[in-house]
Length: 390
Image (cartoon, rainbow, N blue to C red):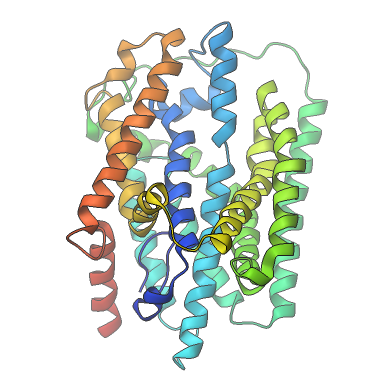
């Protein structure tokens, strides 16, 4: 079964799972909110966020850029890597039980795709589940091949992604530096003034625009899935993987992070290069740092246990944190975003982020005290069992 969007771990191996995995999933889930929360607190949602509309002034502009860059792409990359690790664990479990691989995984991918479609229309147009479902299906079959074929797939996918980023860099350099025509404000604005169903219709009307990112990052996702599986098999979570972890931390924190921060603070189109270029490398550093910590201290402390609970309910928390944020910020809910000026948006966004994170931590803790799975995970598992029996 698949426990969550990043935890495709069969029940029979749950008792021996590595504590670092759940902690990393929890960090990744709440970390993605660190990027997405700025979308919710923009008066024009995702379109306004991409266009940098209603930007603050003075020092608040630089504080906003700094805070956004801290999360930009890092936790998306970590989430993607963790999904690849989950596939590797699931494949290993199938091999130990003598089951064929990928076996019933296409059913799991189909259910995740359905989850993603519903999440896209009903909750958030920046949904990642649909992309993960398609990528996971492809990678599941790739993992059934030999190590050499997997290495070729990883190299080819990474090369395509790097070529695309290089093309974007060339376009940025060659593009004229004159002022561009300002984008017209949304009128009507479904984020501020529309109902819940107005936003659903708006997502349908702009389906292609909102689904461009999953298409663009498809090669990167394949590469990160396969890299996650490869790192797990290489022992990144084991004491013997110290050299791997050290190299990943050097690459992520000493090399990629400074470049990522400087380029991201510059703003403009360079954010594309950091989000999809340097940020995934920083993700590897985060992965290695947490893995290193848990090789030295296997028993998680209080904060780690709370992150681990979110990680065990990753799908439920991912959907719920976006739903709660939409309720707080959009017009169909409390509409708080429209009541905040541009220069007050930074402290407002930080406050909303901390509030939603606290709610997710408390929700996961209380829920798991009574139930084995999160609510969405339970629905997912029940659907999979019904389809698998059929």
